[in-house]
Length: 284
Image (cartoon, rainbow, N blue to C red; front, side, top):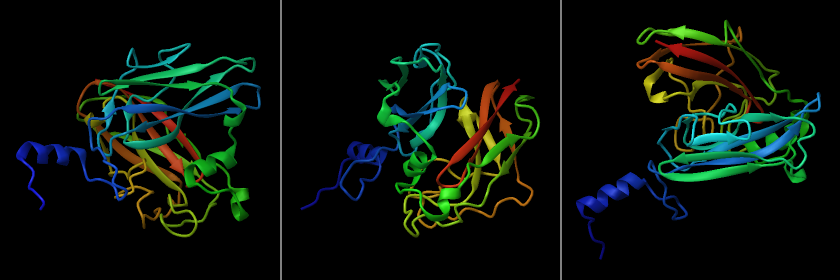
């Protein structure tokens, strides 16, 4: 015979969130963030880009971890361009660290402490981790490039105006991303066809990359740029990318309720490849 849980036990279960269909416990908050080494890609000039992402073990909690002892990349850090505002769940290829052609057996380490737990990602030029756009497409979709997808080009993103701005607490700041895309792959809702993990087709969203994102309001509200399979993201079953802007302009207004330095990112994603542009805002 089932028993009703006590008040404390029920509260604990609610904090954890609903268990998945496979019986795994899911957490809304209270868990840490694990940095991840995604791979590396050689550049035309001989340098090498090392790709990092992260897995926020929470389904809902966003975490702010400023650059410093709890969020540092070495050598050459602590600041190597990593995020400080961590979105929930799995976020792939979030930033790159460029190393010289003679990096050889060197190693880049990202150390991250969140909610009291420290984890590290160790990156090196392991041959099995070399990336190209075909591998990245597979990372995002779980499937290989085939058919018209062979001709897909990465979206382009630039900012309208300067990459560094000034703003005042409480006064909306206008920001616009200029985005171009080749229309490949064709738009397809998440959960349809062979690519069941994500929608296909161009989608563009602004979000906070650095700074305390809870102090920033973006208007109009943006869809979730991270994989939320329940609601409101390109990974939610049935989610369809909106029609691309005819003029390629994606404007928003950002309002800050606390002074500080923030970085906002415009992400253009076609389901299998992505590009972004960042704007740094000094708020007084």
